[in-house]
Amino acid sequence: MTLIYENMLSSPQETFNLGLEFSHRISAGAILLFKGDLGAGKTTCIKGVCAGLGVRQAVTSPSFTLINEYRGRIPVYHFDFYRIQSEREAIDLGLQEYFEGDGVCLIEWPDVLANLLPKKHYDFHLNWDVDYPPDTRHVVIYAQEE
Ligand SMILES: Nc1ncnc2c1ncn2[C@@H]1O[C@H](COP(=O)(O)OP(=O)(O)OP(=O)(O)O)[C@@H](O)[C@H]1O
Ligand SMILES: [Mg+2]
Image (cartoon, rainbow, N blue to C red):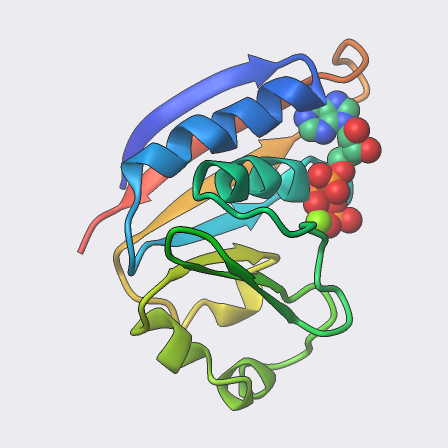
């Protein structure tokens, strides 16, 4: 596990921009996990990644559908597993095929997937605390190697 980024971001725009810049580091097959509390900024960061990948559709958390697919320069698969209870639901969704597919997987609330994840992925941790100034988030990114 390699720490590749750590910072305090002081506006939604900065969090978006982090995602936008990060998108230039990834290509088909990349898996990005977004962890952190409700409202931490996971979707905001994902919007930036999507913009950087050329997605022009609206990007919103697929809380009920579990997955949104967007067309960018490469396909973008946006998952939100906040509501699922078991790995089974993710397997039934065809998660493994998405992992082996032709696009990028961006996953909010990935904890339930612990045993399904390929070893190589990126972990985004977004957090906020009552002590932080308004609109501030702490963001850490780790690269998980094979
Ligand atoms: N520095 C910041 N970075 C990101 N979002 C911020 C920041 N400061 C304030 N916000 C606000 O916090 C909210 C973040 O919402 P967002 O949907 O991105 O969070 P989320 O982690 O995806 O939440 P959920 O768990 O509900 O999916 C937005 O309303 C955004 O405007
Ligand atoms: Mg979200």
